[in-house]
Length: 347
Image 1 (spheres, rainbow, N blue to C red):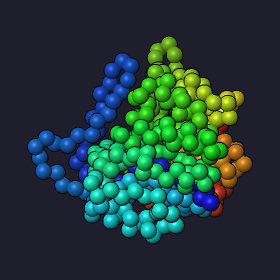
Image 2: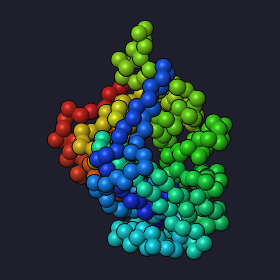
Image 3: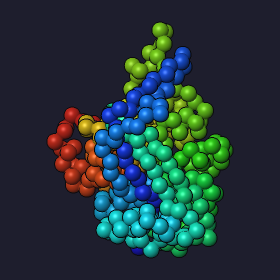
């Protein structure tokens, strides 16, 4: 029996780092936006360049496998030079590749990741096969035999299979960990609410949670300083609105500010584990999948699972690729033992 099946994208990622990239900040009364810019009409020298496999389905599958779970991935690729690279890398892992769908009529997903000197990134994504997954292509028998499915964001037409997948999993007693993406969220809260209701674990970043709940996180003003609170009251409202199921854990990640969780009784806050940031790509995948895996490892200790996720995510951002730097449970526990002051807080 397979422990975990991931469902999501598979891409070939090309990383481009350039010291001449500028970070431009634009402020309004209610929000701040940042943009990466290059001199217009110029030839810009590349500082560093590399490539690796990526995509939410692949990144999380490789992480689950590295943590010791029998893992398979349902993802779709083409039959081109990029698909060969994806299969070559995955073939070196312990993943079960029998559920990978290959279609000669579409191209493999491809991304160009522009890295800034701060370690953050802008992604130029060509979805390719990732946006064309059909219900008829999915091995539902494999899902039925799994203990849990991890659903990474599904783009384009692929998002239409989401309802069928979660309904099938619920009917057959397969646990669901759902990492919502913008395509699902844009279909409206009533749609996403039905999906969330079937999941034991739901993970979103703060921007996605805000889009889903229509709750804006208010900045500090002269009269109110929300940043003094461990968990922003607007984030608490997001967590409460997203928790539509009884036995369910909601997680919201917040970039450099760490992550929050809510189980209906307690608000949890965990800072980021210290790390030298090389690239933030894949940090969310590492965090979400490690959190899901660590709940089983820690007997559903939510605070400790957040800590495990933070450590593994920190290791990933310290490396150039989205699927590099994964730690084993033993390596994570060693780092936590070496850093006894790193601990989650109750919000």
